[in-house]
Amino acid sequence: MAQLTGRHVLAIAVASFGVIIGVNLLLAVNAVSTFPGLEVENSYVASQTFDVERKAQEALGWNLAQAYDAGRGELRLTFTDAQGFAAPVKDLTVLVGRPTEATEDVTPTFAEVSGSFVAPVALAPASG
Image 1 (cartoon, rainbow, N blue to C red):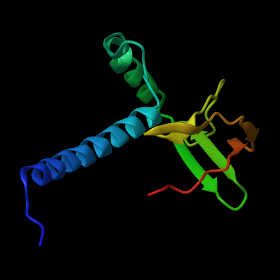
Image 2: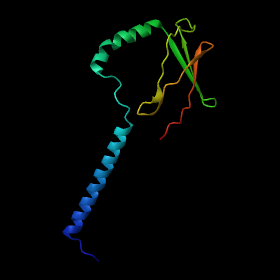
Image 3: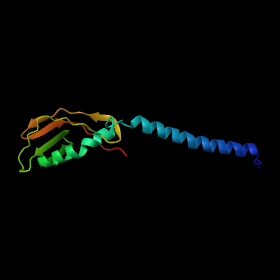
Image 4: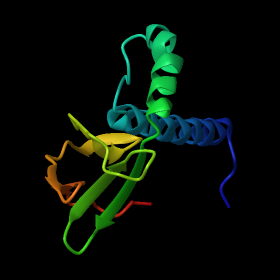
């Protein structure tokens, strides 16, 4: 039976801390590489108009119904006003993606079909 010496204890301690530091570095690199970045350049400036813009949006009384047909790979957005009629959408830009990763983000081109906006989008199932 081998004798436990100071060198053995030092090797065990260095190996243990090496594994811990290595795993932490790996997790940090993965977290930073998948972070999509800033949402706004200056959050304070963006917050100054947030309530006014939110109240203006709520005053419209619009509702959004969204549906995804996985078989057809089709995303459908239907905007209605307070009376339930099709809302007069003048411009529509949509970013489809995951909140924690930007690698699969897409900006589909929508076409208006019978009061709804339809775009071909291939959504991958959530990983995890």
